[in-house]
Image (cartoon, rainbow, N blue to C red; front, side, top):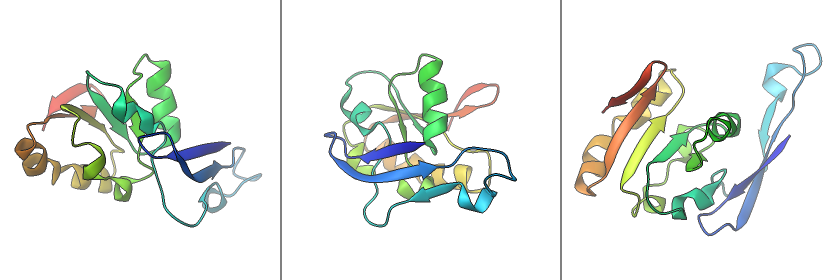
Length: 133
């Protein structure tokens, strides 16, 4: 499967490919791949969608799952290193639905002072609901 990396205005800047299949067909190390160069977000135009919380997740499959569950304002940042504060300046509410590994919660920690200074509400989605940060 191939997913676009786009900017908030919808400009295509890169592609992300994800091979699907069994472990024998596609070894885990060979499943995900990005083209070299600048990265964007999957569904980055959701940043311009207006009112309502913006859900932030790491992977395109996570974003698709949220969309299937009825969350239309969601972006995939392709890993926690892909976060760009300059793209969310106008967003008033952020919901971080990051992986439950060590990188996910660590990436959200700097959001507290920065989002508070910008007047943004923020939450963290957890397996059993949404919690305040």
